[in-house]
Amino acid sequence: MLKTLLLFSATAIAQPIPGRYIVELSGEPAVTVRTSERQSRRAAIQTEQRAAERAVTLRGGSVLITMDTTLNALVVLIPDSRAAELRNIPGVTRVEQDRMYWAKLDRVLTLSNVPQAWEKLGGVSKAGLGVGVAILDTGIDTGHPGFKDDSLIELAGYPRASSAANEKLVTRKVIVVRSYEDLAKDEGYGTDAADNNGHGTNAACASACIVHETNIGVIAGAAPKAYLGAYKVLGDNGGGPNSVILKGIDDAVKDGFDVLNLSLGEDIAGDPVHDAQVRALNLAADAGIIIVVAAGNAGPDENTMNSPGTAEKVITVGSSSSDRSLESGKPEPIDPARLSGFSSRGPNPGNALKPDMTAVGDNFFTATTRRKDPEKFYTLTQGTSFATPTVAGAAATLKAARPGLTSATYRSLLINSSSDIKQAPIRHQGAGRLDLSAALDTPIAFAPTSVKFGTGGAEATYIREITVSNLLKEPVTVDLSIRGYEGKTSPTLDAPAKLELPAEGSAKVTLKFSGEGLAGEYQGYLIAKNSKNGLESRVPYWYGARSSVAKAITLLDFKSEGEEGKAMTFGCRVVDASGIEIVDARLTVTSMSGGKVVGVEAQTGNPGVFLVELTPAKGDNVFQFSAGGITRTVEITGK
Image 1 (cartoon, helix red, strand yellow):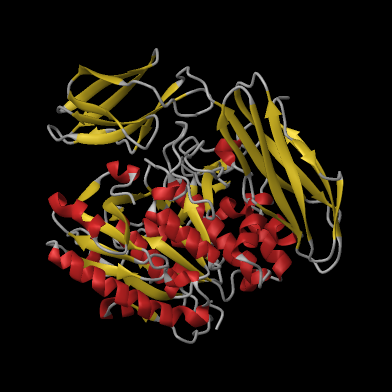
Image 2 (cartoon, helix red, strand yellow; image 1 turned 180 degrees about the horizontal axis):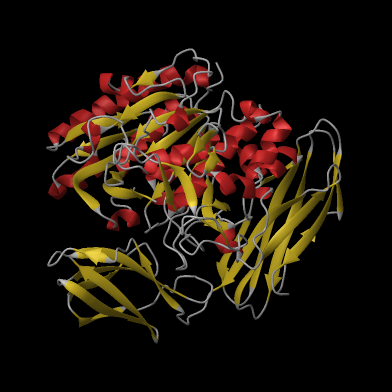
């Protein structure tokens, strides 16, 4: 790497883009074959795509752009009235309407034991050295002092840029700069990869800023010596089409980046099986890329995990608290052992247990673009958007320190070495908060990294197998145990209490969860304490027994402000006390003052989710949402 047949996804209810469709073809993308075979595979894909393009043209459409690395797909412009005809083209397996996605260090690093990890490496000069992190976001202010490092060597085959304008933005540290203005077709997007929003610069600094002085002290990213790639997939308003993000993923993998950071998402996450981003990212992970994705900022509501954070093989990151607030202008201590209120929660669609872990994402001091204010270099912000690149930078530092492992192994080392946030449910925190120092020292890895027994009834029997691997060239003994929450029923463990792992060997252990009269959620950890240094690794588990009793109404892709007289659309999900959707729920929405209710529609293929359309009046608008005997008041300001 950088070292030398569904027509419409269920998630398409969130801001579909008229006349734009992602058309996937049956041939496997290039990333699925060996590196030596990818050139010939791409040639075969081009032949398939040319035939499909001719068929699109015959149906009154045109091809805007193609992808061949993580997806074999075309982005097609066609009248919506003729979109269904795309399914009849030979070789087409899926057609999905394009839609919009949105963007979601002083003490930050200390709380994740990042400086301690640098010290173990022999200093910050080795943190992430030779590893590349691709930031798929609003661009990067590449001239910011936080990204100036003339000591980095120029790599063969780099720099790379998508235009002459972007060539001017390339530096020794930001070695690839790509923008997608022709594909975005948005007047507010811009004409190059310069960051006019700030979000991408915020994220890039959290990941890989150099160690440098600011007005509040010294800050740095988690991998100060890593290279960066700027992929402007989101526009100046922080939003971008799914197709642009998919193209950015495709390019970043093709460009050879080791780590991909996506601090973006969509609140209304449907079945991951029908999600193009999920498929692309899972394939990239299989090809050796470490992928880190934001959980979302829709908390504290339950069952609000964003897409593509539902992807099984990515690291999905929630936000935990810092230990001090800077909002008053001076540091004030706060409790760090808690989850951030805005961090999206599970349970989530699909078989994976999300989020995987957390990192500090509130009271976050980081670089910002000088395009908005030439005098302002830094900002105080919050969001899973900033916890996520901290983990991406940690992944780069880990890979530089422990080269030669698989992406699945790096993923386990980061997730399963995390520190438990006491009292936080598993479906809120995953394995816990990032501990990079522990990840450097942990000798064992797990597959899978967590166990989601699933959702079911009052009686259940589930059996799941976990592979424990020794990464050392010497034997390791681990003490295994189960640590459940609240004294509830826990899985039984079919394995020796002391598990002997031979040098570079592995063993399988089995968790069995069963019970009768089950109610609510059952959660905890498989604990593995290793003999080499006493470090504990944790594999989270979770089971939820469905209830027919509604406990909460969750808002999805909701904004508290709207335009007077203009309809606004968002999602709702009715959930029980464990956050599990109630599939046969009925939702009514009533205008209490101000605006009008246009409609409420249950979404096929996305259980428990309703699409709500309201038209606000100017000023204060109050709506009452009711389902299963519970109500929620929603206030919207009409501008």
